[in-house]
Length: 350
Image (cartoon, rainbow, N blue to C red; front, side, top):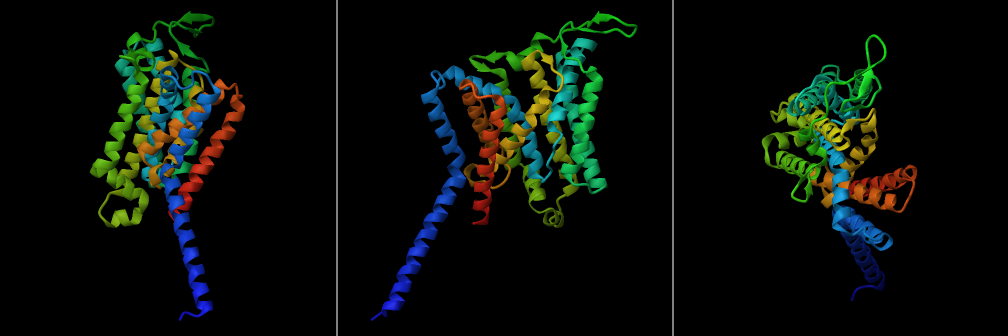
């Protein structure tokens, strides 16, 4: 026979073990599907409170609204894969936006050049950050901070603090104003305002960026090496991976995607609005970090970043339709990001 004391201890141990298993299962479930549950709950609540929220038109509006944020956030995610956190993405997007508009309006450049040149500039800014990180061993975040101010300054110097739009009036060197010779071309505007069938062009660009970057990170040697560099740089170096090269690649990709977001912003607004891109920084970072908690990934990933952007987009769209002041919306963004990071950290510890 089993003594009563021993039997009681055994029962208590089994109960504790069962509770631990249930707790582990709950954490794993939340870490894998918590963001999707949050999206479902928000969608259900807003659909009840707001007539027309659950409609194809509004869903299309949400996707179009998050397209620029998602493209820039993909760049942030690329950097995070190599543990290269870049604060300059919004400033680079603003500079690219100004360059795209200025080239067409002031310099009569064709649309392809107005798209390609800002992307090259974005990549160069990323490479400059990587140079200071590698050559002087400055932390990535700290190296990107002064570059953020530099990119903002270059943007404002280039535009003179003006908004750039078709046939605008600009100050003349000798005083007075002159009409700018060029206009933002219709072919360029289709990038931000056009449709392919019933799908907005920026949504197509976003989906293409998601597909290409996801395949790059998960199905190529370069993507796997980026992850290895970010996971354990010393181990990656000992395994023969040129970690400095991949850190440069991470920053260049971050800059290029940020610039692409800026080009899309100009095409969306048919102008370059001074400092308009700088409000995108926190949304892009939030989308990237929320992605850590999607499907229990626990690491930067493109599908998670897109899911995070969708969550933020649904929340902003619903709160705006409920006439919640935009000043209060950041509170909800912060709470969602805090919850996502908390779940991902708990899952990682288990």
